[in-house]
Every structure is written in structure tokens, then in C-alpha cells.
Amino acid sequence: MTVLVVGLSHRSAPVAMLERAAASGDDLVKLLHEVHDSTHVAETLIVSTCNRVEVYAVVDKFHGGVSDISELLARHAGVTLDELSRHLYVHYEDRAVQHAFSVACGLESMVVGESQILGQMRQAFRLAQAEGTVGRDLHELIQQALRVGKRAHAETGVDKAGASLVSVGLTIAEGHLGELSGRRALVVGAGAMSGLAVATLARAGIGEIIVANRTFDRARRLAEGAEAPARAIELADLTAALAEADLVISCTGATGLVIAAEQVPHASHRRFFLDLALPHDVDPAVGALPGVALAGLDDLRTAEEAAQALGPRAVEAVRRIVADEVAAFLSAARAAAVAPTVVALRSKAAEVVEAELARLAGRLPGLDDRDRAEIAQTVRRVVDKLLHAPTVRVKELASAPGGDTYAAALRELFDLDPKAPEAVARPDIEGSAS
Image 1 (cartoon, helix red, strand yellow):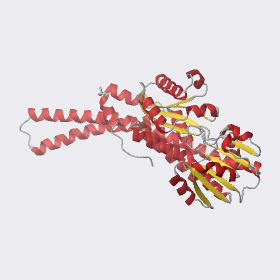
Image 2: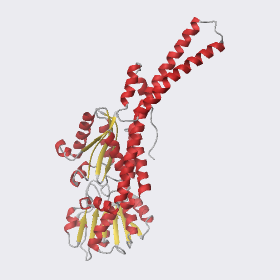
Image 3: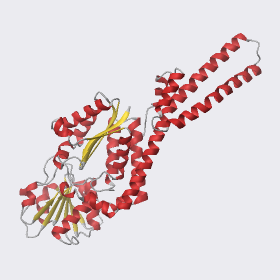
Image 4: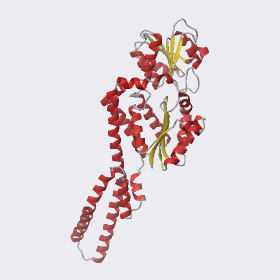
């Protein structure tokens, strides 16, 4: 069983395709189980965000796993496999580990270094865990990826060098509106991205923040926690709020449009709409209204270069951390993979020793307890000394690439039951995301 990643992101696909492939709510749970129930997949989780949809899976066959997952993604997106395949990327074994760590550190994000992806990966893991589609291998991979992401942020500050999507959007907004300080902003939605928007607007000195959400209590809680004057409104009052706002940021999880062009009243002041949702919240026709500018995810595609220009040293430092962590993770995984074979070898040796001691007791019934104990200790000591050097050495050799061949050699040479190492290697995993 090995780890496979099949996905598409802002780097490989246009926003229109990402919108079709994105999954949330019941659709995400359904896709998760469809992947998990496919022929070649043993474990899976799905990371679906505004700029990436990635399936992480443990598979028994590479080609079979890629085929299963690609076909299910195409069916979910409502496109042909040929249409989707040109936008897909595939990572396997070592490269899958490197990709997971890079994603967690924000190196693969539209805005390099952004930290929101950590929460998104953690949420994906928890959903898969709750649905019973994740096991030992993905548990260890994702938990380590989350730790690597935290380490990268703590040691390099790359999450500060790379501005958030909201920050980049506000830079674009300033080009249209001018100084943002003292202006009125409307945030539509109350999820994680909306919380980030409210915090970023407060730091920008916005005069007032209005939060609109389908669930009023969530909007109220977000407004109450803002470090700027803020108030919550019902979604039914959205049209009136749109007339008042200078800046509108929409980032809901709705499956259809939230803001239609006919909902946006004419106003004497200039207005800027920032649509960070996937699928889009804002009708593209809004951008054609007098005095209105609209920016979406497509307009933020240059943000990666901007972030790297802000912090090239931090980005390079993160890449070194990822390389070191990948090497350590793979080395530990290879060493752990041989451990069950070593346990099986020692178990077989112990069984042989006990059988021979029992036979000796039958042949020499006159031995007293002291002599019998001394003989047993001597035989066990001899076996331990004979096995010590090869078992230590095979663990060392196993940590290098191709080290699994040494475990296979041990099983062949000592005629070990191949199921014995597997039984030791795969206990039930219980735990939660850190």
C-alpha cells in the first residue's frame, strides 16, 4: 500500500474547472465514500478549497488508483475524463509526501505562505476520520504535514511574508477606491475566510464592517469579535447593505449566486466587489455596473509572485525545511516498515528455543530446576547474540531508499509467515488531528 495524490489547483486549472470540481457538504461526503469504496483504494481524504481539489489516498496499485480517482472526480465535476485529465496532476510515494508537506506549508497556495491551508487540511482529516475513510498511513502523513506546516511558519515567518488572499484583494481594491481607511465594508458569509476578511479589514482601518450571513447568530458572533466597529444583519437585508457599502467581500459556501446584478442598487459612490468564493458568489454582470469593479480568484493569480517578492528568503527556508522533513519522514517510514519483520523473526526464534528446551526436558527428565534454568538462559543468550547484529543492521539499511528489499530477504531466508509482519504493522489507529 502506498500514498497517491490526484488533484487540480489554481496552477493547473482555470477557475471555471475548479468550480465544477469543488466539493462541500453532502457532496463532499458522497465523493469521499465513493473514492474509499473504489477497487484500489484503502484510505482516503479530500482537501477541497477555493483554489484546489486534491484526493489523498492509500492504494494497492498506482494505475488502478489513478484511474478510479480520476473517473470519480470527472463524474463529480460533470465533465468527461478527457476534459478533466488535462488539468490533473498526480504524485506517488515519495513525491506524494513532499507534495503534502509543501501544501501544508503554503508553498503550493495561490498566495505563498498563507496559513489558512493548515486549517483546511485539518478539517479534511477530521471529516475523513469521522466518516471512517482514513487509517494508519494517512493519519501519520497528514499529522506530520500539519506539524511541518506549523514549524515552517514558526521558524521562517513565511505566513507573514505571503499576504492572505484578502490582503491581496484589498490591494486591488485600493487601486479602485483609493484609501480604505474610514470606508464601509460588507462581508457576506461567516466561515473561516469571512473571519479572515473581517480581521484583515479591521487592520486596514475600515470605518465600519457589516456582516451578512444566512445564519444570523454566526454573523453576530463574527461581528462581535471584530477589532473594528461592526454589526450583523440578516441576509434578507443584503440589498440595502449593498447600497451602503464601498467594499463588498463575499466568501460563502453556497452552490449558486448569492449576489445578482439586479440586487446591486445604483449609487453615487464607487464600489468594489471581491469574490473569494468557489463557486462564485457574485454575478459577473455586477462588474459591468456603473462605478463598480469586481475581482475574483482569477484576478489574484499573480499573488504568488507578489508574495515571493515579499519574502524570497523565507520561501527558500521553507523549501529546505520541507526537504529535511520529507527525508526524515521517509527514512522513519522505511525503518518502521522493516520492524514487523524483525519482530516476526525474533518471535520465530523464541518459538524454536522453547520447542528445543521442551524436547530437552523430555530427554533429560532428571535435570533439576537450577540446571534447567541455566541451560535455558544460555540458549536464549546465544540466539539473542546471533540475531542482534543482523536485526540492528537491517533496520539501518531499511532507512535508505530501497530498504524494503532487506525485509523481504529476511522473510525469504528464514521462511517467515508474510502475514505475521502485517499483523504487527497494522494495529487499529485511534487519534485526532493536532
